[in-house]
Image (tube, rainbow, N blue to C red; front, side, top):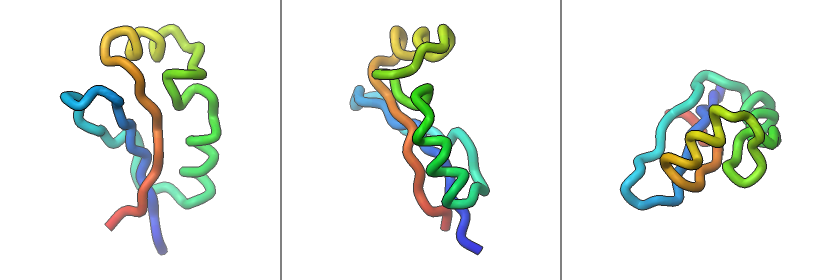
Length: 66
């Protein structure tokens, strides 16, 4: 069975991408990425807004695990 991981990617070139979650189905990964809280442009959670203030723009995407 193919699984997917959520990857948080940052716009700033010095920030490395990081894995947020692993072992997801395609449907779970897609549902995560459709949530407005998974992008610095649409997030309203204060914790995520702090993340944006410190590290700049970011978004969550998904990729197939190897």
